[in-house]
Image 1 (cartoon, rainbow, N blue to C red):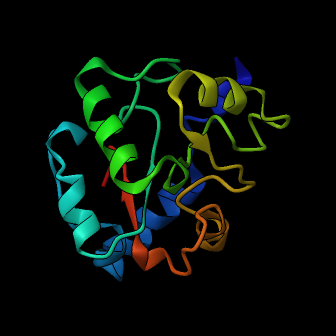
Image 2: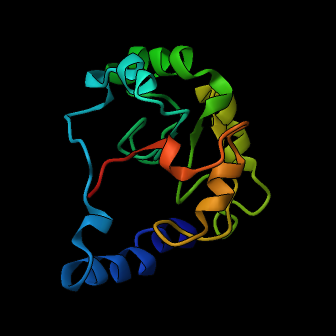
Length: 154
């Protein structure tokens, strides 16, 4: 229970909010907004030169803490994996895969099996952290500028 409650407080997110509110607002602004991923044209994004997709889990692919993909986005997620290749799609979550809350990767392992997507293991809660850890997850990708980051907040 403590770990779930601790996930609700995101000091890095609060710091980014204040930094972007008084400084670089583009740092926290999405390039595209839509209701959910079912409206994303993955083939078009691939044709623009993007090489991989990084998803947030909760409220993007699943309900919070759920082990199944939202019904309305299942087909789009499969199109994404078909377009980019399963090894070029990953999840970067503040729950599963974050060593603070999932130190042995048990939750990440279970979700990988349930969702069919790799979970990127990391030590720092997003939005803080090192983007190099994310890029390293994607074979052949050498820059975060070649990745699409998909989440539910901005």
